[in-house]
Image 1 (cartoon, rainbow, N blue to C red):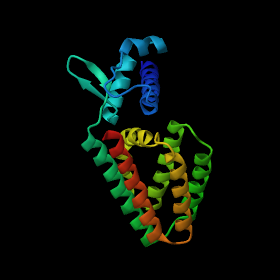
Image 2 (tube, rainbow, N blue to C red):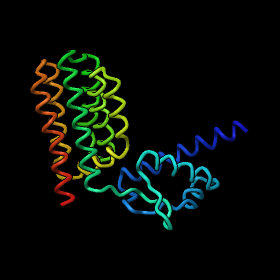
Image 3 (cartoon, rainbow, N blue to C red):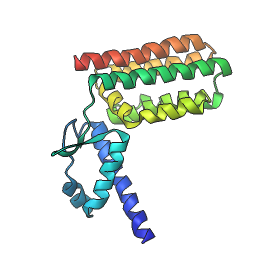
Length: 215
């Protein structure tokens, strides 16, 4: 019985990851209904693991249940989008403030440099979004604040989905790469104030890009 339960949980997680990727890539659009039997047929399973996967996605904020319609891809309001991006900005500014107090970690700088090298070779928006998140997550970890890290992680998949939309603008990936390179340089040279100013502009540009898309 335990093995069956474990297998079902593993399958539910796998299905949830698949649907998440479809949402982040834009293959499933906001408001689109998730048809349980289609995923059940695709994975050769009953609807139970699919239902559990959809439940997990609703907790993550990617899916919502609408009366008489069922589970659909969540459509964020403008206020929700701006709130997520502004909270992200606030947490990253708190992180850089801690770095200014405690110094930049050479191990984290090396990790950011490695991630940046991967970012330079990517043109796919989905892959770039994932790498970008890893880069910023490393900056947050550099703060050595578990509170900031926990709050940042709570922004979760909705933040990645919004960021992936912003990276569809022409030239946005190239601009992002240049600014991440500058950020590492400032941190390595101990120019934390310059790094903070750059990070603030970088994040505010994402908000500006989203305003243009929603306008």
